[in-house]
Every structure is written in C-alpha cells, then in structure tokens.
Image (cartoon, rainbow, N blue to C red):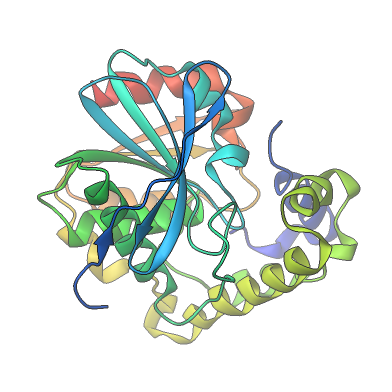
Length: 294
C-alpha cells in the first residue's frame, strides 16, 4: 500500500483503484457441485477443502496449470476477467479461486486472525491438490500476491513458476494510516462501492472491509512490519515481479525488496500501470505473463 504523503489526492486515487472490473494436515474432501457455465469456456464449481466449500472458476485444457489469486475482498470473477477470457487456453489450464469468506466461498464469514495469509496459502495449495494438479504456477495480485509468496515458500516442490504484482511483504505505520483512511466504505465513491455491494451487500462489505483494515494493520506491530519477509529466501521457483510505476497503493520499494530477496527473480516495470494494471492493460499483461510462464 502507498504511503499517504499526497493526502486527499492519494486517498482519492486509492479509492478509485478499489473499483473492480465488469493447521495441520490438509483435509481434501472433493464434493464438486454441478458446473455452471460462464460464456462458452469457463466453468464454476465448489470443492470442499479443509472443511470449507471453496468456489473456483476453471478454463483451458493446457498441460500447464495456473492458479489465480485475487486481492482484498476479491474473487476470480471480479478480479481476473481478462485473464480467464484471453489467456492461452491451449497452453494453460486456469483456475481462479475465491478465498474463504470472499466471493462465492461464503460461508464461512471472512475473518482475519494473525495467520490469515498462511491459512489462505494452505487453502489455495490444497484446493489445487484436491483438483488433482501435481504441479502448478501462481498468479497473485495484491493480497493474493502475498498469499502466493507464502505458498511458494512453503511448497517448493509443487510450484512451477510465480508472478506477483501489487504485493507488499511488510506493513509500515504510514501504511496503517492509509488503510484506516478506507475503513469507512460510505466515504468511497459510488463507482468503487457498487461492485462490492452487488457482490456482498452493504453490511457484509462494510464489516469485512473494517475487519481487513484491522487484520492487515496487525503486521505493523511485528519486527520490521513483516508479513512474509523471512520466507522470501525460501522461494526457489522462477519468479516474475510486475510493478506499475503509477501504483498509488504499493510504492516501488516493495517490489524492489521482493526482487532483492527472491533469488533469481525478474522485475518488470510498467510505466503507465497502476494497482489494477492486469485489468487496465490486460493485453500487455497477458503477453508478458504468458512469455514468462512458457
């Protein structure tokens, strides 16, 4: 997330970015609902993983499986439309999941214990295992990028390659101030609120956003504000870090830190990109990602 040095202007930019487009061993009990069709090639289903029925979308028939991990309050449907529609379906099998408490993976209600990123990482990996993928790549945006980093570090034999963007491995006190500036969703623009209220209803959206602020802010009390800094040296898969140079939410020092501490990683800068660069510049993003993954 960006530092609030630009005051109200930065907050307005942040709120505009929030508008979306359109412990223990694993319990893997597959209970797949009838697939619902999205367009002609994207299916939707649920699988029971670790006691929760997780919703996912899937498309493509390629041998290279790729898991798409959404951001805060996000889902596969809201966060990855251009990827599900346009990435190479012959080369890839794309799976876009809704983390527990988000999208259509409700119940349960979303909560943010101290280990919520680790919990999401475990759920994500176990979902792919439940779907019988033996090895797969990760595409993680924002909070989903943090989840991907943890998943890759903890499951080195399962992860083929990884792409992350808009992800921060730590939280500063200045970041916390910015998070608190978006706590009250009534202050968001209608354009930013509408897709979330359509997905969740006002009450759940409002309560979950406030809970997320508290959940992400707790990392500022840890040494160096670390979310996953200590895990980065354990990432061994080829990693591409993409950063939009006009991202008002995640300053450049975050991707540079990732690049420095993930051995052999690549850093790709998009001069006009903002936080949602994969939506705003979907064609360019998809080309860069496909070239890296293949």
